[in-house]
Length: 171
Image (cartoon, rainbow, N blue to C red; front, side, top):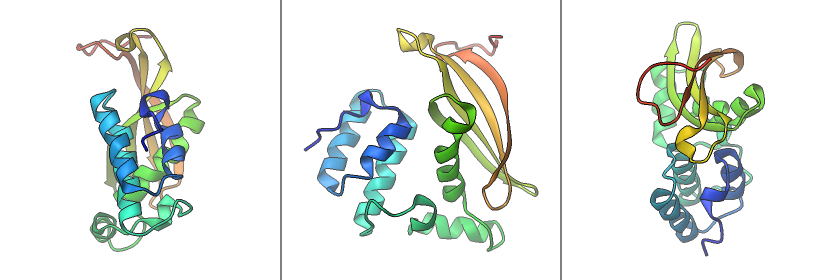
């Protein structure tokens, strides 16, 4: 049934489409199409999250932040002192707000870490699409979140071409 071609959607659009699919076999086909196509980490994570939700009996209307039932989320909450949110909740919150906040499509989340003040995440957004996509201009942003995963600020760390292997930034 893999009517959904993941390469035709941004990760945010793909997540919205995946919420409508309750068939694990169809989700597996979509995952296979993504891994044999663009192989985007964020897209694969979104498909895997939906597969987990379907396998755990959750429906597409469940809110990602409150609907997490996997062991990973529970153990993360204990690692942060037993209160607040876990790393999966922070990742989901960042996925939900980063593109709207920055005003560009989210390409992926590259880092999530906790410290005494809350959470810090690093995301990459597509600032300019190009053909071939190795010439896309990406922006790397840091988002600051409080202990409850509310975004408190963000800043651009650097811009670079997707295909560049050196550390030189584009201004």
